[in-house]
Image (cartoon, rainbow, N blue to C red; front, side, top):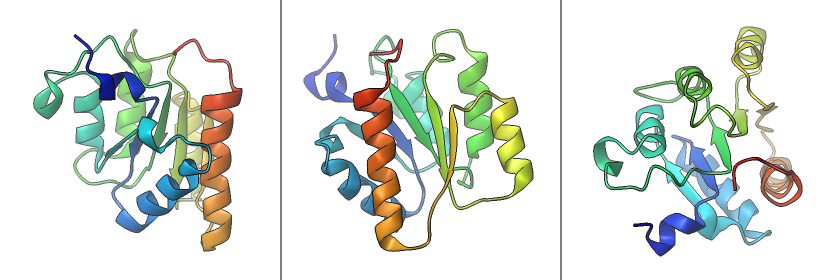
Length: 150
């Protein structure tokens, strides 16, 4: 049975940097999306959440986020591996995935698009610009975009 909190999750946000995640969450709050975000700290936890395993084995796996915000450079399992798994599984391959990372390396960008990422965004270093980008991502992908996952 779904619990109330789980039904509100529309964004799975995988980010290991506490400063970046705090800033992004504050930015998403502008569009009243923070109560709909599940923050995980590494790729392993993101996969456990998505597939209801490990520490999330009691989660209703039929309820999926409508957006995955994914950092690339994370401990345990990196963002590329998370993206590869998401795109290879029938029940998750249609979830929009946005890479939000500090990596502007061409190999990361190319690999992400080869694996089917929907958008690749390099985190701006300036506080205000990063805040604006995070807010715009949440606004577009959750409130404007028409997704098959709701």
